[in-house]
Length: 512
Image (cartoon, rainbow, N blue to C red; front, side, top):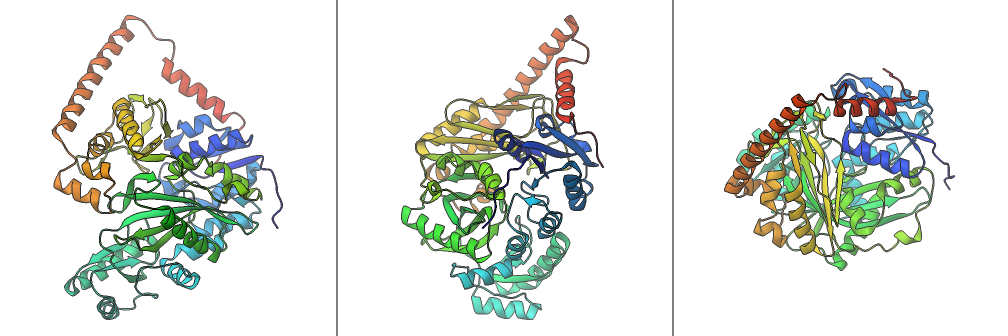
């Protein structure tokens, strides 16, 4: 049985909105929050809000947020009890988890053995088959040659998906509909797998036509208990990257929810999983579901589960890492109402999602009943070219899906982000789309609609033009007022940012 220990200080090995989310969770528990930052993030919101902040390196992530040895060394030096990895960067690196364990610190996440087991798609397939979890028909070993790939595909039956064993995030995947496509796809997938993951092992699965992507949130403690907290619908994706998520799924019945939850618990138990994790499934049109992968960390989309269950997942992550047992209140959690999340990116959705770095000149986030903002930026903040372009997430809750959609539409009318391009105009079109409103979703739907131009209505560009004109007029007025009356030394915004940063760095100092 795990002993319970109280953390006094936690180092957050991440940046952006997830670092802010974890800081808030730690603060509510009376635990000191320490953050790391790169040169590009010196004045980030996470740094401003943290109790202590430490420079970890220059802007490129390989020289800063991916420096696992340096991060663990820093945690030991500052007297941290644990490290929260957030998501992305080192969050699913078994080697990073092992470094933390070897240093005598606690990872706020699963053991390195579970991360390693689920990090290989082939190994996780074998484990799931042994645990009785449904998997997509396909191979159980890496393909040694093009000839073996061709023979395996013929045995499975086209169409097939060629996948990198170490893949993730939509990389290392090719759809092959006929034998003539195999040779080029095999070479390209192995090359991409080697370049992206340092492992060129690939395998084949049967392609499931127009499936939905439905995932189950689980929690596991150090006392042998694992619970399911229900599902999230994550089918709205762009090139296999999630864009919109909701809970519960519009098509999952209580009976199907129970079966998927039981399968997810078996999957977690098969690898001795502890802490928060997500078991992802493909759901076909007949209602059959198949194991896709397990994400051994907190998910970007965790807020929708929090909104419909009332369970604070970050709080439970910390509690489990401290050795606390899962309570009986988590034994039969059912969703209440409906929640939808939009990922807000600094990208131009109508110019092939081109990145849009720059300074946020104006930021007004929506408020009111049922609205939550998980944001990692502030007005005057600079969006760097070095990292993922996600600014934050807009989450709404309603008593049912209809009310959630109405609140989402209202929130999108209120939000203003100026100075950079964002994906907000795309979402304003999406909330009026008939298929989205009806919940007729699959993982390729968004790509189809974007390619067909269905989500670029005339009013989208007109609205953007009006917004830009209004922004220009307001900027001119501000300039006129500024020239008429001298501002305090340093300017109000600059003074606040510097003062806030000095306060956040008190007791921290710089470290490299």
